[in-house]
Image 1 (tube, rainbow, N blue to C red):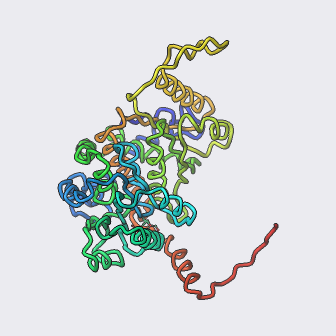
Image 2 (spheres, rainbow, N blue to C red):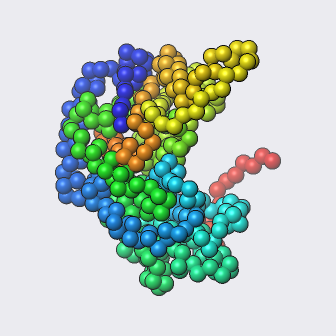
Image 3 (tube, rainbow, N blue to C red):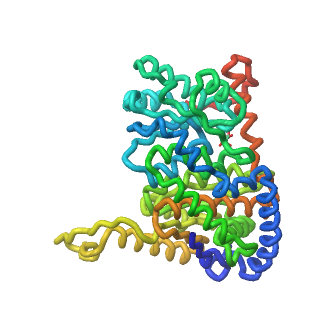
Length: 424
Ligand SMILES: O=P(O)(O)OC[C@H]1O[C@](O)(CO)[C@@H](O)[C@@H]1O
């Protein structure tokens, strides 16, 4: 990725980072880089994520998904990191295989999805690192029952991706289901470049070898300086801006196919850095669409944000027909990509003019190599930011309380009723 941080500096924004502060921060980046490299060498928990471009075996993934090559639809049953990486790659790069991601427990949605799915030609990838996530297991129990009721042998159409133990591993062993192992030492949100994120894209015709190759080339270019390593420029700049009130990090890709990437980024940034009262609130936006919904706030609201404008610099295009309508002469003869690029550059300039910090991220095009590199670099950016915040980047202890409360409620164990102030 190519990262431009000029509009995040104090020269452009009243809440921007002074250049000398960035120079000082680069000393800390060098130290953090050492920690990260040592963590990679030791394959330490979390840091091992950055070794996936080398350690993930695409042949093993292809062998595991081979029985599902005839699938016309693929249903991923998984949530959070067990769905978002695969959704990012399959949505942006997949062929005409229909890919569906069941990452919520909404009965109405599940009903309409099951009514739509050609169950006999559907491959199901049930994914859970812990193997115990309630939403994933509940959804899978419903899906398998639905397949059985339709006379489809679900054991012939299910691939499991999970850890060494847990309900899902037990199920895989009991029914002798094909199973892929989640990589050890890799938290879910950092597992896009592993069995977790690559199995479904492999079924959907994605060049997973190209994805890993792109990530490897990004890994090879990392040095201990933010002025040389795009990932570190991104992570350090967002950290430095958060120190200056930019507590909201909006991710705004200018490509429909990259919308799931913004969702993936939101989990990565929130769940990794939201600790000890720290962390930036990620916001998912889409360019040019959200220019017509969010931009008013981004321009005229509080200077509490950094907006990442992300675009592929090349890609498919379509001419805009000439229209003999007054005032539309500026459209005819141009193309949709030229319009999108103009919108991108105009938004970048308009935010700079209003003093709202932005970072511009460009990839050459939406293809396997570029997306593999982008995922890897955003993970490295997040890990660096975690070092600078000095937080536990790779755990997410705060999510457990709610899970336990939900289990208590389902078991009928009376929960402490909280006082309410209901108006209806
Ligand atoms: O893969 P699992 O264990 O089902 O977890 C799914 C997601 O839930 C979380 O544990 C949060 O509850 C995420 O960290 C993870 O990506």
